[in-house]
Amino acid sequence: MGHICLQRILKLLLDQAKRSPRRFRADQGPRSLFAGWTAVVPSLTSMRLGKLASAAATWALALSAFALPAFSPQVAEPLIEAKVTGDAGKRQLSVEIAWPSGLKPRFPRDESGAIFDRSVAIAGAARTPFATIESRPDWAAECHREGCRIAYSVDFGKGIVGDRRGGWGFEEKQGIVLAPLVRWLVRPEDRGARGRLRVDFAGGKHLEMVSGVMDGRTNSIDTDLVVMDGPHVVLGDFTHKTIDLPGARIDVAIGTGARGVRDDDLLHWIREGAQDVAALLGRFPLARLQVIVASGGPYAVGSAVTMGMGGASIFVVVGERTRKADLLRDWVMTHEMLHVAFPNMGFRQRWMEEGLSTYLEPLLRARRSRHEPRLVWAEFVRAMPQGLPKEGDQGLDRTFTWGRRYWGGAMFWLHVDLEIRKRTDGLKSLDDVLRAITARGGNVALRWDLAQLFAVSENATGTTVLREIYDDWSGRAVSPDLDALWTSLGVRPEKSDRIRFDDEAPLAPIRRDLTAKFPVPALAATRP
Image (cartoon, rainbow, N blue to C red; front, side, top):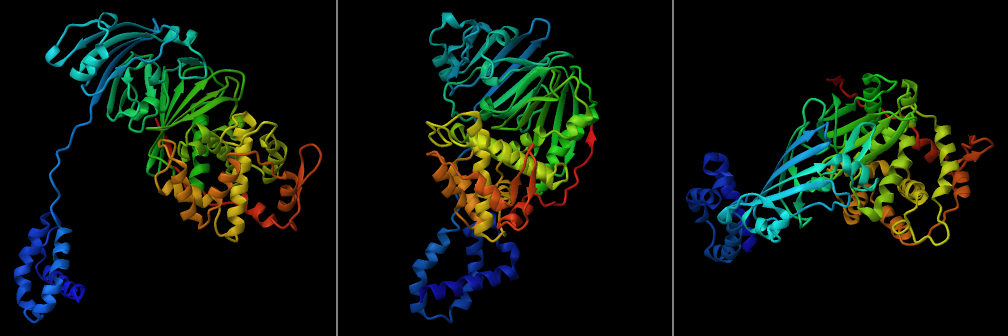
């Protein structure tokens, strides 16, 4: 009976609140309840004392839900402040860092000897003048205890020559220097340390710093420490443009190298890639994306890399003889934009990221009439066998060949998509999984684990397809019968990479749905 009495009491309190709303405020907690209690007590006299007594304990528990939270002072996160001066002629950086106590600093690994003139001045009670790092063997522990100032120089020209390319070293592509923070900026020894990073860069007219951090600006970074392992940081001379999207923007930094297309052609190409993905998701997947375009080289579109964690950036090289028509039929930008829409999954699941972009890119372009469905399936028939396991394969999580990562991953996502569609009679698909990821805030700026991905997929589709196929394919070699799959989809290979469609095949309706047109959301114009 106690809960019935409690319900009557709460109803009386709510009725009193409606009559005297100013007495009840969320920030007053129990005070507002007791203020209203005096108005309620007369109404309680009609209740029997026994019922009131049986409700007492329950009423006390109800009041505890409104208890004021205990005061806990906010502890400011440690702030690492770096002032960096660049010299384009010497190809050097001068770095001075105000380092907070509570974090132990560590210089980057420097096998090429690009970092020199290292010195430190301890702050706090042990305040000391600058001295060389070599003369203070306990400098890192002292900085951790007292805070300090750290100064040094970086010869990025020497780093470009001596660093191992393709890793986290300095690299130059068509006049733009890739300068990842982890290569040249002192960082906490604890890679999981919490804190803020602020970098101010001054390099003169022809040397700017551009980064993909979420709230970054040219020559400035002010964000979480996670960006030390995050998106691109590059140095160079750029023209800056912006593509405005509903609720988001794409900042475009265009290098000064020779090229055969205008800025407007580049921006149209980038916008089309973004629109391919926005048409799938209903919106662009994050608030800010930085695209860095280098110019030069023999290919229409050369290398392209998307990076995330704390932000998002795409670095792409456009050839010096590239024409507008080359960009219109190119697939690279859509592939990279799909990376932007998918969370970081870690090294062992990199095949999930690359495979998703490889699988969905041609489908999305076909849905917007930018690619022919017959060409989509002809490419799948020709290229997907490269993803089949070879001797010694240990599954997608433990086999790191190019074919398995890209086309093995694409084959995985094709099977996931088909199975979701079959189990739900076409009501759900992989599209729903990706939209759900976006709705949950997932994108390349964040790290997700498999449990998060599976939970979102299961909630979006009402199936455990993604988890089941991952469990089957990730740890062992699975060789699906691709010829039988093409036949069931009504894809009949012919000579010279041509195919014909069999619309009587059992899965032909799914094949048609995969490239069916969808409406395109309008994206706003470009601005300088």
